[in-house]
Length: 451
Image 1: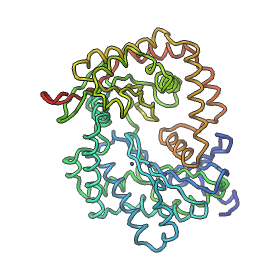
Image 2: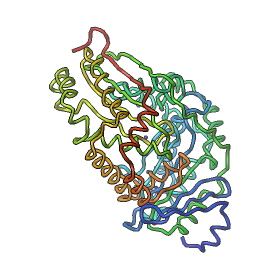
Image 3: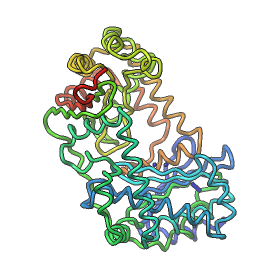
């Protein structure tokens, strides 16, 4: 489910704020602000074009005591309410056609937060912020929109069951997190979502989908002062609500495997991975470096002929022509990040593929990285950071996710320096301290259905 959206003296704006912090990030000043109602606001000038991007996130993770799927259902309800406002409310007529363009508004449910962003011209920014107020911060639940949300989540669950990579990935999360809420599908199972009442949804929205847990990021051609004033005017009187509890960051303390089967599956799918330190810790950056060393067309796994030989000999030729049977999963901004590898293979070689993937992971603890591999991985990671600045949308989402996880914005120069200073010894230290336990999720064809 993914993001956006005049003039006043800075002294007037600051008088309405309880905290203002500035950081030079990606060549422009990023300003972090907390309004009197607890709403976190991040602004950043991006004068490259007239495009403005608005990110809205709610810091409500899966660990909050709730019926499973409630967060996703509320997010779908709010998406439907925004669509309804754009279709029926004349006050949003000017911005409606613009926001119906493909990709202009996107929604996502993550395990640690809810996320929405929108793209518009700077002239439409005020309207988009008013749309955010009416669509996301109104706690009144409309039963017909809630029902539409149930249908969407049921479709998403059924679609997930058709995607072999996601089936294996959820098995992996179960192995890593055991019975924690973060191991459950973010959209919940249809039978769970069907039991959620409008009153439960309304109570949750009134308590948590309010300013105390919300972050709004505006990346636009406007100055920080102008953007802050627009946000304050539109959202400064939103109710504070109740601060959500901090998430549990722990993983299961032992290596674990979760295996399931799916009817009509053509091949076995597997995710093998290890836990990483959370964002803001040095080991997280090393984990992102390892993603760039292991993955990609020139990465370590792609050069392992014996591994691909085992995979390719046991896969249908038509499947190989459509996609690569081996992928390193990105290290995402999450309270429970992980370094993981996805593989497809014949059921009879699952054990062998598991061993070969672990061979790569375990070798990192022995410092088995060539200097040229390290340098190439660091350059890929630096390039990925530089690409964030190319679009207002990319920068808004990046800044919003950092804020959701309690991290201050970092300058591109500082991040580049940190990456350049990483060494093989840093990789070895991370592997030796964090990779003793690994987690495996396997999804097999049902008995008698293997090719």
